Length: 165
Image 1 (tube, rainbow, N blue to C red):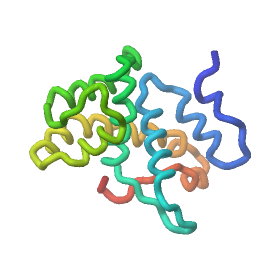
Image 2 (image 1 turned 180 degrees about the vertical axis):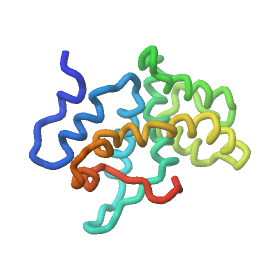
Image 3 (image 1 turned 60 degrees about the horizontal axis):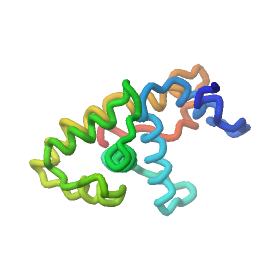
Image 4 (image 1 turned 90 degrees about the horizontal axis):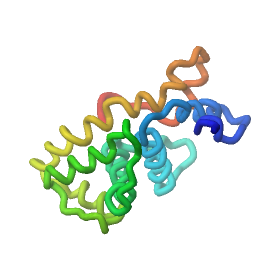
């Protein structure tokens, strides 16, 4: 069976090969959820030619959690032995900082995460947010960052700006 990296359509556009390489080695859902979240956020924005689009890591992570919520909570889907997304969601529920149940959808999860109070937000950042942002952003960019060609970095789907989120 071909791996996910072989299923990206061939393209002359720079970056398509690198994008295929992103998904070549995956043991969990993180990269897929990260990418889907970025795509959804980009699609929801008013894009202007020549103007940089800024996405924050907190909004990407909130959407990752929201995208995993329905499959893991409503349908009890297990993403696999190595995947910790279900564990992160269970930790979120055990912190009792959000009132959500299996019937909630993506929008409800995002609203709940965006409405956290400061004491709740501190718990969320430490237990849920930090583990999800520790490696995923860098691992996603590894095909571009490990390249010997200087122009490849210009085609990376994103770059971090400063030390902020």
